[in-house]
Image (cartoon, rainbow, N blue to C red; front, side, top):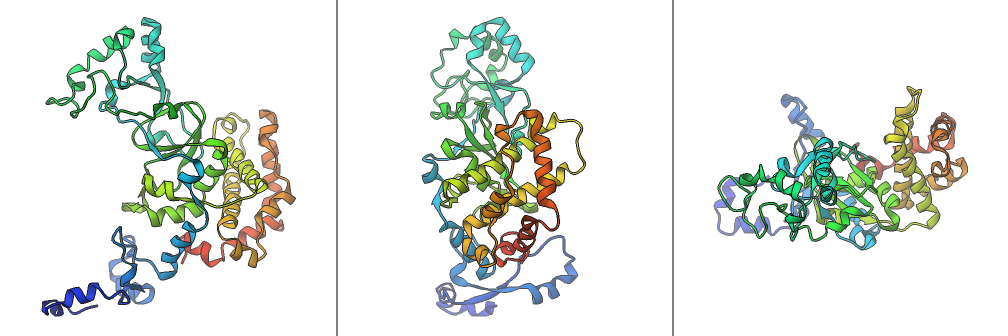
Length: 399
């Protein structure tokens, strides 16, 4: 470390800052470790970090291999925004959810009082309702009075909102922030409101692990979530976004918070690379994603009896998906170790649950799980070997 006394010398600080090859030893401290162990941990685990690797948009105290990993991931494909042909959108800020978000009983009452209310009442989900693979329905509805709404055409909605009028007034004490909107309108302009009604991939704003879901119900979203239109390749993109490879990217590209959480940022999400894949490889990813959506969603929840091995089955299918995505991002490393997950899955013949009756899906998935989880199965062996690859260990925080 530089001697602080040296900073008093003219030009010394500038000299230090302009020395790109200058290296210091750094260590990312785990708060769960005992403080008295710090000297030993630093001596054994600290690594060199060059001045040039301290970027103005944020410092990451990682090894050179870890820092280069982000560059490798970014170079692996086309940015999501370009691939999907759309930007990432934020959910809606109403300015007063207490007024604009209602339960099913209130929705039914408003429609009963005047049928015009139905046009403004939209299914609604908050960020906390977005789970990995699925959105957990909470039976909430948004009164979507966007800019330009003629409230006179919705008398029941008008009467309901009047009880909150003081709190809804823009730019007055006790009201909402100033803006060019009427007291009965939601605060955001939301010029892209029609995108809510199309198929979309939804993300929480703050995550501890990738938490993306596909919404095909036309659900409107709160401002603690982001979304991007799904397009024709929604299932394929969803598989990539819920993978460990994406998690490795997110933990390096986004702002890290306390306790291992990180904040998803639109620019960083739009920049996530989508690696090229053949139509056959995309189809393989999509089939696993369909199975995971069904297993985590209402379809599997309705199956009786349950099996104590079902959680293990879900975990196994997620590991298989990670293997596929790692092969797309790092084919050289995997193929050098004869790890070819796409070929192995094709040989194993996973069930196409979209072509099966709902009553047969769980049995088919359980059978495939027991087959491929068997200790001597090539897929089980490949998953074991995958964990020993350096790039995988770095992404998963094991090195």
